[in-house]
Image (tube, one colour):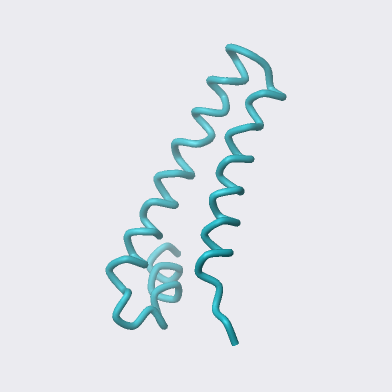
Length: 72
């Protein structure tokens, strides 16, 4: 399934294909690292504090979308 997702997400990237593919790969790595970091924080401090990790991730995604939104 990943080859389909990868090719569909890069379909209209045009000249930015290399940069778009690097962002896609970074998101995969982030999906592997962020839960581990959240679990580590939850084990050492508390689950409530562990939810800071996805909050930071979502804030970064929002910031990226706000900076690079397509103006029509």
